[in-house]
Amino acid sequence: MSERTIELEVLRYRPEQDSEPWFQTYKVSCPEEWVVLDALNYVKDELDRTLSYRWSCHMFVCGSCGMVIDGEPKLACKAFLRDYGNRIRIEPLANFPIERDLVIVMDDFMEKLESVKPYLIPKEEKSIDQGEYLQTPAQLKAYKQYSMCINCMLCYSACPQYGLAPEFIGPAALALAHRYNMDSRDVGRKAREDTVASHEGIWECSFVGACSEVCPKSVDPAGAIQQVKLTSAIDYFTSWLPGGGSR
Image (cartoon, rainbow, N blue to C red; front, side, top):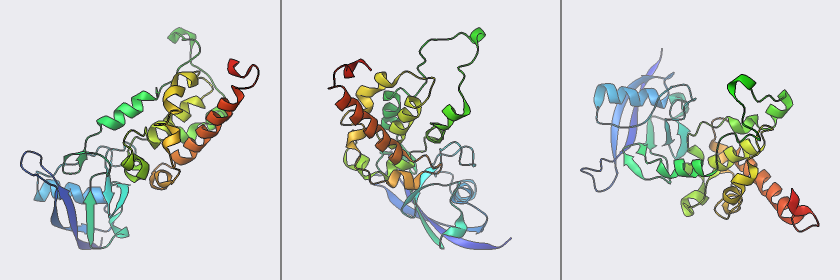
């Protein structure tokens, strides 16, 4: 197994003693098969136990290890060292306050996510004895792509609009709202509409598309938002037709 020595240039910030973030460099000898997360774990275990970052599954499923690697929002568990040079700069996700080192404050994202009611709102509640809410494979296919989001927040870090206008609900939350609106078992579209179709919602999106480019699960939040814009515009114009408001 071939090895090489790389330098990790890691942003550090400890609020109890640092007035501003700063970079610290670590030299790590590592196999090419390693990912950036492996290198960070080596630093944490062998070189500097004060380094803080989030991670959990190491299988790009949980979304915990999102960070900016050489200027691009990535999952550290999916960023292979063989794809980088001998010096790698690692920073926390952009557009979020830094809590400590590579750890960001997630409160704003969690509030935005909650605001779109990201859960099934059925027409009628069923007891466990009554069984599942069934749907066909075709009905599942209609929204499955948008259900793959792992809340890694890479799209928020890449989104220039969220950086300029923090009130923007953002790509992941809006894509998840679209996922439930497309679900045949759900009737919650009206309940989400005031939030989703507001200025801070879909109409704040300028369709740069960076969110879809960095998504590790190919959710395509930019595409989801444009679809919601279309249905929202149709709703607006049909509401002016005779009987149009009775949908």
